[in-house]
Image (cartoon, rainbow over all chains, first blue to last red; front, side):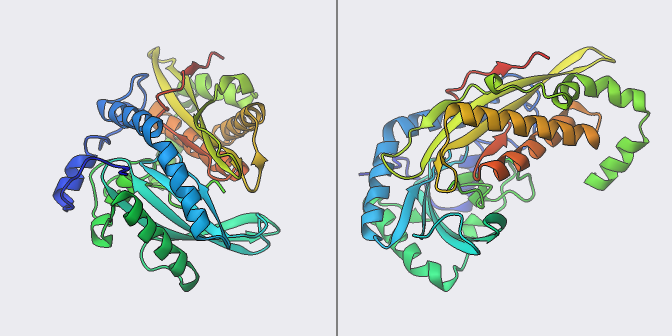
Length: 199
Length: 159
């Protein structure tokens, strides 16, 4: 089973060239009713992806839940971003009193790569007051579940983890709200607001 | 130009110029003109059999008229929200529409109170960003952006 059938060399040049098909550097189309050609490509691709692959992703999330019975696992895909996403977090009452950790697995719809990141959500009086994302090294409590998500993504879909140094590569495109020179391959291939998790 | 420079510059502009651009977008926001029916949500990711998840999207085109030149621009708003979260439970379409309209009206009030720029592009961006901040606090994970999902039908706001 394959979630992404478009193999591509994992080099900065090829990935930057790839994402430039789906995002622009300028905001010339912001005030026009029509979409840019790049935006049209992105939106059309998402319709195809979710039509043909969301059932596979749901099945993967179910399998992940079976592999991590002591934790909660959910499909948190938001189709404004460039990835299927799942979240793994402790089975506690939400919102919690103080904090919650979340491991997020993302599979890009643009290239056959995945990424795992962590989030620490802080609460006070059951209101979320802060989010911290961990795009590189994960805190100890997140490492074991992250490992399970990674191994299962590789085994199920034959995907490769996007190396961190490639994920940090700047790309000259706008992925709302990120703009050059701050936009990275991670933003374009997965998500530009990693702290946004609908759980 | 930094945002503080933009702010300083816009404050130096004569008031009539600001108001020439602002009313069509902001007058509507300031008096609760966004209504739930403006947010025609469609389900783009169905809710799983159990638990939270699922995703819905709506699209708004808000006209901005520069009354000095009568040029019309469109501020595109892609508004996307989860169908259910652990925190909120299942969120019906009617409830999502009410929340989105309330947050849009609140964003309009905030932007009208401290407009940073008379330029339609920056005004639209400022409104989207404020709307996003308020909506994503109301329902965690919600988003407001420029791009509208392909399966949505843009709702053109007429104030």
